[in-house]
Length: 346
Length: 95
Image (cartoon, rainbow over all chains, first blue to last red; front, side, top):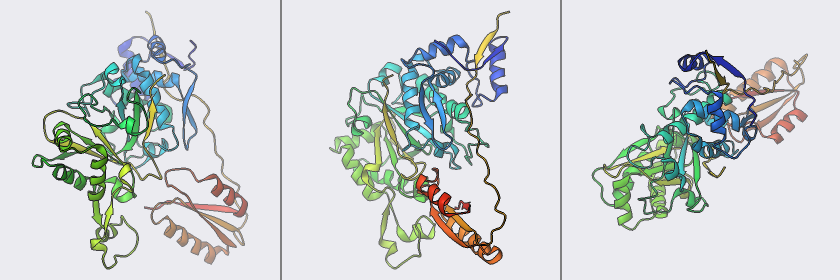
């Protein structure tokens, strides 16, 4: 197997960690030195040739090869068995619909959220239960970190340089979850998006960091989801200013069970949220989220925060105890970015 | 002592180099492309610039184009139109 990356010689492993810092290769945390044998083992985690171009970053026309993904995966602390998932994530991000460059460079500090579905959840031990947004699970932490390192080192998205994120975000270190398929009463996300239950898939969504929704009072779906819908329509959310985009709702264990016990499926949940994640037109106009002057009747004209119910993605995940869920607004409207799902099979 | 051989994680291929177009000798009578990047108020900024160009430099007209999305490159058809119809292009972002 032939690798083509430039070789740098260093004395030992500790020197190597400092060397990686000095080269600007790190996200701020120590990295695993990308030694040749480790990179070769990482490449062997996929059936693809190291020279294969997995995708091209739009706007800057930058190809991403299997070899460069592997070098960054080593630095992130990935295991070679994570490679097919990682390759699928990069492939999805290079789909024009996702728009790799946009969320990577934008002042909004969005990040690619990866939702893992299918048998690979168990194979790699990707966490979709208690504490799923981290920390503590190697697959979640290192796959997401590898994505960020690829963005930094291959794409050149370095904060203050091509990455213009005003605030940054913890989700920019790593942002990977699984759906809790084992306990979910509903159809998994990847199946809703056209794949088979037996497919292992990643869905990549350019998104804000997760916002928790605390509802300890409601027991009925209308009550719990009413709180969720209210959070989806918060004026400061990215989706409210940038025009209709997608939205993800991660329903935690207790909320999930109460809603499911009442006989609601994901379609009904989406329909309810679509009807209730709204704000009056006069308010949105006064805050610059809608164009035009305020007109008579605008205070009764309720504007949905997504264009259609199908733009709301529902994921059942999180711990079994505690009445919490999360909403995850989009990074931008659907004309700028859409979530993309890819099979992880290489 | 044995050395560790580390592989470079960065992109090492070619970076396509853009180049600036030649300056116009004069703006007098020139047709100016106005490329709106689709962000709010970009059009206001461009129209202000258009007014100045008309009043101060006697430009010969404008070709107005608006991108489909602020976060994506201008569409091929828009670039072709600007290449074919404009002598120079001003672009603006808004917010």
